[in-house]
Image (cartoon, rainbow, N blue to C red; front, side, top):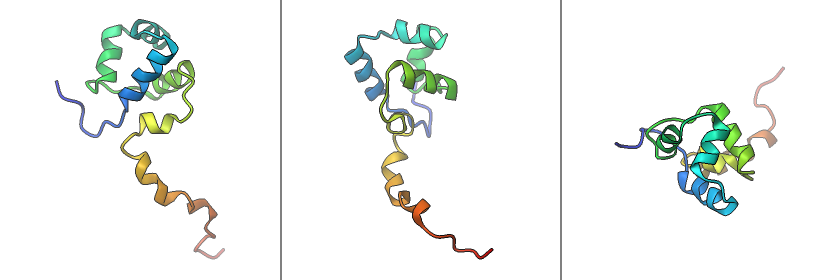
Length: 93
């Protein structure tokens, strides 16, 4: 089965962090309250993680930069927007 179109999860980083911490798919699935099969499908792009599941993964794996993992294809393009908050408003009150 093919990865869902538009799915941005970097499963390699999640799996690498799991190995680093000695966490199995069974352990992570238990933390998320889903089956191992469901977790496997989500990690391999055949399902989509919910926001709650992404938050739990971030906590369990102590992820430093979850944006790079859960929005993998978007984050590299975000550099152009880094200074947006420093700009003065272009409208007048």
